Structure formats: C-alpha cells, structure tokens
Length: 328
Ligand code: PBG
Image 1 (cartoon, protein in one colour):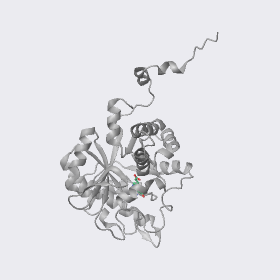
Image 2 (image 1 turned 180 degrees about the horizontal axis):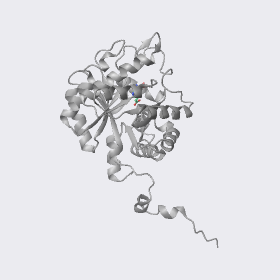
Image 3 (image 1 turned 120 degrees about the vertical axis):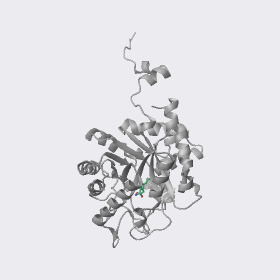
Image 4 (image 1 turned 135 degrees about the vertical axis):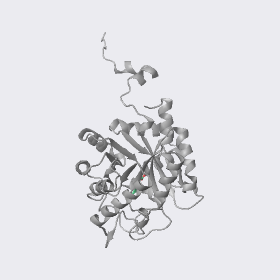
C-alpha cells in the first residue's frame, strides 16, 4: 500500500495545534481606529454610510474613549468635520480647528491614548479637493506649505503622530522640516505613501463631507493600474523622512502591502478603508455573509501580506477577536 509520509493535514488536527503553528500573529497593539470629530456641541450620531461609526462633537468624545477602553484600543486617527469651509481650507490649521479641539479633548480624557491625525485639506476646502487650487488644478507647492502648517498646528495641539493623506509631491519633506523647526523632532510621520484614487473611499466622503465638487482626485492620487509606481512613491517618502509607510486601500492592494514589506525596512501600515468596511456591513445585513468571520479573515489577510499596522473601522471588534484567540 502507498505509504503517505508527508501529510500537511497532520498540523491541522486540533485547534490547539493549529494555533501553535499559525504563521500570522496579530496583536491589538497594532490596530488604529479612525474617528470623526464634528465641530459643534451635543453631536453623537451614527454615520449612515458607516454603520457602527459615529460623528462625535468634542463634548461626546468621552463615548469614544470609553468604547476604546472597553475593547483595549489605545490608538486612534482623527478626521475633522468643520462647520465652515473656504477656498483654501484655513480651518485645517486653525488653532481652535475641530481636529485641534478633538486632540486636546482626547488628551484631557486619556493622556495615554495615542492620537494620530490625518493631515489633509479636503474636509476644509469649499471645493473638496485636497489642496490649493490654481484654476481646476491642485497646485502642489502652495499645498505642501499649507500641509506643513496643518501638521505643526496638530502637533501644537498635542498630536502624537501626523499622517499626510493628500498625495502631493514633497509633502513629507516639507512636513518634517516644519515639525523640526517648531521643536517637534519626535513627532513621527506616517505617510499615506501609496494612496490610490479609489472608489472604495465613497462612504468616507459621505461621512466626512469631503467629496470633490468638480472633477476627481486622479491628478494627485494614484492610478490603480500601477504597482511599480507605488514602490517609487514609497521610496520617495523614505528619502523624505517618513517613519511609517502606508498602503491604502488595503484589501484590493495586498500585492503592494507585500512588496512594500519586502522592499523597505520601515513599519508598513495598511488602511482598510470605508468601502471595505461598508461592503462587509451591507453584505452581512443582507444575510449574505458571516460578518464576524469575514472581518477576521480579511484583517488576517492584510497582516499575512505583510502589514505591521492596520487602520480599520473594525478596530474594537478585531481587538476582541484577537483577545478571544479567534485570530492572532
Ligand atoms: C482625505 C482622506 C480620505 C480618506 C482618508 N483620508 C478620502 C479621500 O482621499 O477622498 C479615505 C478613508 C476611507 O475611505 O476610509 N484625503
């Protein structure tokens, strides 16, 4: 009789053994939870396009902090919804801007909470583009000067890390120089190094009121036909002084998460964006999939591809899944 000596199934015979030989280990410490801070008072509203996520005015941020504590999440990335917008997005660097207020409030509620801020202008400009316009074109060099100003204002308000998401050329270098000049040499930059002009951001733009009023973002965010170009973007950000490289979106871009991990020595973050979350929520609501299972499997796939850090709206639920031992 044929004697089969090599049996991969041998290592799958019990839950205990399967957990012993897992190749991908995840910790709740590697999760970052995106949070939307809305200017005003008494706002605590579920976001229709992102079920389970909320708009919090600063006076309601304690709810977010409580939820984070319940699930053992201690890292957030903040997005702001200002009351007023203008042509140049001046609310983005205002000392009492909404993100600046949010940072101070969170630090007051929990000084241990690690606060990352999204550095961009699209939530603050009347036209919804991620920078200063020159006609219908986003002017690169005027924009990076403003982005540097925004990053410094976040750091002054107490941000622990800044994350530019605009995709202008040279913004990491400009932000690094400005932070250093202002004494924030130890505030790291997590650059959205390879950020694609993606349809997966749709629910976020509803949530943040940041859809462009004309045109699209293809003259600054990347074309999703391109992969080598993503590595070029990452290499530039490394040269410019980025501390962490981010690939965004995550699930349809695992090839780039993998390549980024292979090629660079910096920590790699992946952002499982609003569309990825909203699709799981919608399919689960329609009874088509097992939400918990899909959440776990998709998160693990991102880590397996090489991500060290995952930015996800499911951060609280994933932290629980990891602690329960269902994943990680
Ligand atoms: C701002 C920004 C966007 C996202 C993060 N920062 C939207 C965009 O580029 O239009 C998307 C996040 C998500 O979809 O969850 N530039």
